[in-house]
Length: 183
Image (cartoon, rainbow, N blue to C red; front, side, top):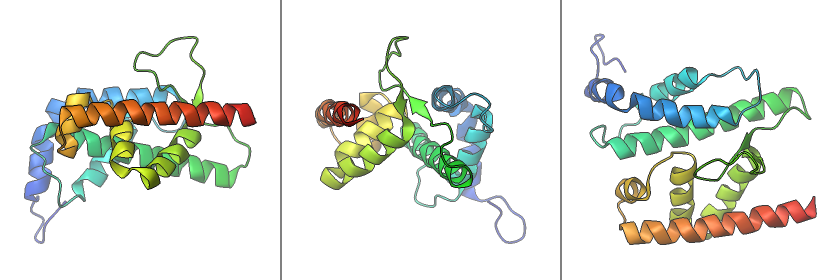
């Protein structure tokens, strides 16, 4: 972000110095997101990172020295970018292809595909029940953060992050299996 007179802000300098350190991790997160997208998607992992980077620059309260925080916020931004992209696509062409993702930590070839929009909606519902639990699930699934990184990011204990992850994942699985029975 340019300050008056064309100078680069301190936040941008901090983020610019952190990006080479976390770029591979952000690329991995973006690649996970994009691997679940339809073929021929107009966004690529690098473009997704670039868009998230631009949005990170507008975050005034973000501590750019905290790697886990930057990755967590970037993952949230990537999720929102893909949601917005999907909403625009669906608005322009109803009945288009859906975005799918895999909730397993180690994707299995036989694992059923889950629609991004379903998980996105369920995370919004979970947030109404337990906002912290929804954040833990979001950071673990979409951010690819470890339990320890998630705990650090949310400033909670590792035990709390583990409990929230276990119960949030179970709630999500229950809701997804319930949705599958109704189809």
